[in-house]
View 1 (tube, rainbow, N blue to C red):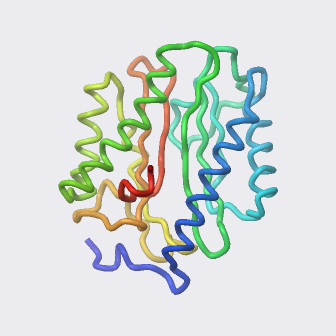
View 2 (cartoon, rainbow, N blue to C red; view 1 turned 90 degrees about the horizontal axis):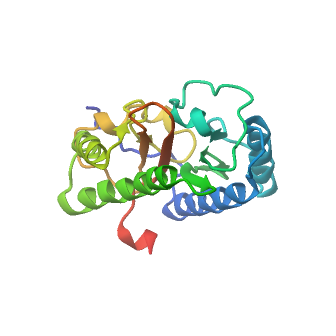
Length: 224
């Protein structure tokens, strides 16, 4: 494990990173509010990009993703099936990464339209598991590897499968890839705050749908 895995770039700023996170969470809420049944996924992606532009974020450091229905099962690196329409009872998630001035934002969340108990449970469980993993990180100072082992066990106990293709990653002043490209799930030490994105992607064991939640790894005070 490189000793440089948690170093930062010359523009790194605690206030800047927190500002980027806040802007990202605001954008998630704004994008989710415009999504409605009958919308085609590609149109939602374009609308999401327009919302980010309207917030003043001209750049994203990874693709803006809005995924509907069966596309919520797919790993992020896999393209969505085109033309998927959000149904009246459905699930969707967002994964956005605005570059806010010099700093990287990254966030995701899942949402449900209509009245599906299984969709609602999956979406809620993804966020709950995120906070469970964050809690053991804060309390027990587990390594990144241990955090994702715990996440996998907890996901199974909830009745879901944890997608191993979304194993968390560094975040920094742009670009973090010039600093460290390894995953959180491979990190052998307890990760520092303000350095890592914790990703939770739950999938239905029958392969029909999934739910996603990600945010910066931070202490409880930032989630009040």
